[in-house]
Image (spheres, helix red, strand yellow):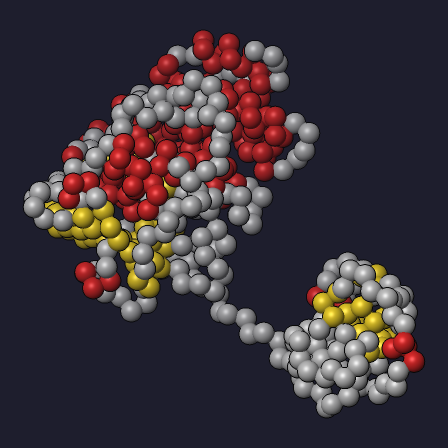
Length: 439
């Protein structure tokens, strides 16, 4: 998920404004620097709310009532355009842009912004409603305030919907806790110890960069009982605080990227909000920290509130980066089914071009559906990416009507009298896998 624009109405410190995060047609500004202050904090909280579902927003208002209204007698208006990515958040051919919002705020209650109340008009953008927030997989929005507190020990790394609220809770609650870095790295090492995969690739990447930041061998320390904990506690707090934030980001990116086609979980798209990171990252380390985030999360859109001196230290080359706005792929039309004249089928063409492995068919197995169930008259091993005609016989008397447009395999079937039934020959010219081609 990325943000293309945000429209705020009656939001304290924001007023009535439209925020456009594009740099031109088809491009998003990747690093969005904001002046530290009340207006930027309000903008970051509004963006965080834009990434929450019904479940998370309801729980947020219960934990800490949101007093956002500039005029208490008027409802808050939050309207935003999200960009969704495939396959994590939408189908390959589904629309990319989603236009939705929240309204209310009176007595802490919010509801979905109705389509009639939306101010932004774009025929290419689909209007919708916020999702229910049943899952935190695929969608990534992280938010960090000016206080850093790591949880003591593991939080069991549960994959449940409320993690979406934990990911940005520190923007609303200064007492919110982050992932324990020791527990997270030990979890990664445990997951990658016996099997290569996403966890091992991520651990190797994190260990190398954290060793450069901390000045000692992170990967080697993890392999020795108690060594990492001892070195971590001996490290200066000013060095540890940025690592706590960065590893909390990596943990949630790893958890959210299970639907990602890429084996590298750091390729997960998303949004990261940072409100005054100067409070927990010393000035001399800030350029290195932002470069680290830039290399770790190449597809993330950042919003960072910094003081004038912090903006002066920010690496200038990062401000030149853009993110492409994805485009939906055209819908694939289903393969046409050719109608055959009335009659039974003795030979069935099996199209193996759709598979990349051999297929074993056993004599006596039954193929269900189409206008007749049919049984295989021989056993045959079909070569991958090949087309073969196999002999079959009908097993149903008196039926010649569609049950489906294609065959499916029956787990077990026996065949007796139908082997002697009279059959006629019809060969399909455009079959598909396990299909006779008729409808």
